[in-house]
Image (cartoon, rainbow, N blue to C red; front, side):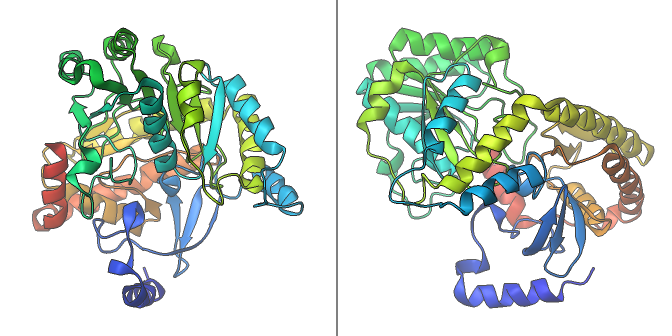
Length: 424
């Protein structure tokens, strides 16, 4: 595939942007053939700066739930844009959106809007501390809750004091969680949990009911707040709280990415158990209450309530998982497919340095399928059975090509070191 425009943009970016790119959308830890810059998107597809088209299993790292440029959502956003967006005060849509989310999410009695997932998780932590008057916050080892100093996975530029009262436990390990709560003593403000374990570089884990119940019971016993970070998984597992099926409701939940189908908005939802604390903190941003993303969110949430987007994604995910397992086995490869089928993590058995996963991602990209070798992926409602069948056919060819060059595959040294550090 031609990469001339992408390479030129990278060279220009290096002159005016530190490292040429930063954060989770940097391709520094992906195979060299992966494009950095994209020119357009539609439905389930994206086009890079050189015009190459890909079926996108990253969905912008999650925001594309219904598909890029969904006409219904964009029409609602455009109609509001004609009236106004970022104003001196919020539009009436803010109240309507808060009411809608409170109605849809079981535990929620109130909503506070912001822009990014990090905003919402940080507001959750601050609200919990304000409500309880305590300091210690427990997070699962390896979990990602954003890029603020208290939670960033890359600590350059932060101080030890930034996370002096952040302590860890092992996800799904009740004994580990109980020990961390005991160690916190009477200074426990909150326990953070993800709807399921979706850490990079490792297999995903669904939550064990005993773990979820223990988190709730330990918070009730200590007066701490239970916080569920729904930013990545929210509305991809359920039409409300992800842990409702486990019989567990949090005090606070942080949401972002997909509930406005790619328009920039996030939200902290809370129960009355933390209303006073949330009302006492100072949290704001010039663009947090913009009206256009709220219009997009209202339409997206309507579609979430009224369509079969979730069931459709699950059906496609099951078709993809079974098809990939079948063609992988035909070529002598064993996949490790984990997590919910609509948010797949696809890795390889006996691939500790990711050389097979990298090689397969390269082969898939060359066939027009954008898949990630070490991060969970996403399905969107714009995908079709034909897209899944095309992916499986491409995978069949990719496995054959990979088998032919398996002996020549090389690991990525920076990735291996990073994966090892994060896994431990």
